[in-house]
Image (cartoon, rainbow, N blue to C red):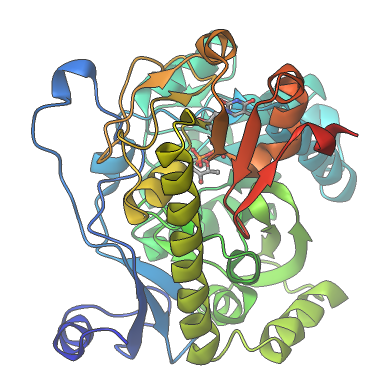
Length: 424
Ligand code: DWN
C-alpha cells in the first residue's frame, strides 16, 4: 500500500483531470524516474538529470487512471526523438487506419480536408494525401515537424489549443476528420485540447483518436508503457461523461492491437446514435472489474513479479559471463530499465534503428544506443527486447541473430526467452 502521508498529500494537491475529483488512490510507484525520452548526449552523461516520482493513480469517482507529477509539454516534447515511421508495423497500421477512415467517414475524398494533431513526421497524413485529401499536420516538436515538411506534408509547428484550432478554421476551413494517434494521453490540459477539437468539429467533422487501452495495459502487465509523457491511461468509462461534458459524443470505439493493445475512438458533435461497440466496451470494462481499485492493486503485484523475474534472469546471465544487450531504445524501455534497476553494468548497449537516438545514452541508466549494424556485427548472446510491441517485425529482421545462437529476452507480459526454435 502507498504511504499514507503521501496519499494524503496527493489528495490535498491533485485532482482528477477528467472529473476533478480529489478521490485519487496511488496504486503503483515506479519512480524516481527521468522523462522516458530524455536521451543524453555524450557530453551530458556526467551532468545532472531531472528525476521525478512516477506515481500511478486511480480516480475512485470516474475510474480514470493517470500519473503524477504532470510534467510540462515543453519539457517533454519541444525536442523529440520518437518517429512514427520507425517501424513497418506502425506504418502498416497507419495505412489501415487511413483506409478505414476514408471508407467510413470521408464522403468526397477529392474535396476532403484532414487535420492530424501531433502529426509527428507526417507518416499518417502522407497516406491521406496519397488518397487525394488536403492535409494539415499540427506538431509541436520543431525537429520532427521539419521531417514532415521535407516529405511535403504541410505542418504547423505549434502545440494544439483553441487558438490554433480557430486559426486553422479561419485559414483553411473546417476539416472532415481530425486525427490524433498516441496524443490524447499526452496532453496535460485535456479541457483546452477538447475545446480546440470542438472548434474544428463545428463544420460537422469527426474526431478519431487512438491511444493505449487501459484494460490491455493491465491485462498484459504493460507497466513499462507508463511514463510521464503518458499523463493518462484511457478507458471508455471515464471518457464517455468527459466528452459529454463538452457536448460531444463517443459514436464508435474499437480495440486494436498496436502498441500492446490500443483503442480507436470516434467523437462527434452531432447527435447521432453510437455504434453497439461503445456499449459493449463499457459493459466489458465493468464486468472485468476495471471500475474497482482492486484490479489495479493486483496489477501492481504483477509488476513487482516481473521486476523480480527479470532481475533474476539478467543477474544469472551476467554471472555466467553471457553478453546481454538491449534491442529497441523505446521510451517504455527506459521505464522498465529504471524501475528494474537494470543499467549499464547489466546491459552493454541498446540497438536502435532511429538515427536521432544512436550515439545517445538512455536517461537514468546511461546505456549507449548503437545502430542495428553494430548489433549484427557484435553478435551478443542475449538481447533484451525493450520494443516487445514490435517483436514479430524485429524477430523477422534479426533471424540470423537467432540462427547464430543469439536469444531474445521478452519481458512483457511475462519474462521469457526466444531462441532459434521459435523460427520453426
Ligand atoms: O506514445 C508513444 C508511443 C506510441 O511511441 C510515444 N509517447 C513514444 C513512443 O514510445 P516508444 O518509444 O516506446 O515507441 P516504440 O515505437 O514502441 O519504440 C520502438 C523503438 O524500437 C524505437 O526507438 C525504434 C526501435 N526499433 C528498432 O530499433 N528496430 C523499432 C523497430 C520496429 C525496429 O525494427
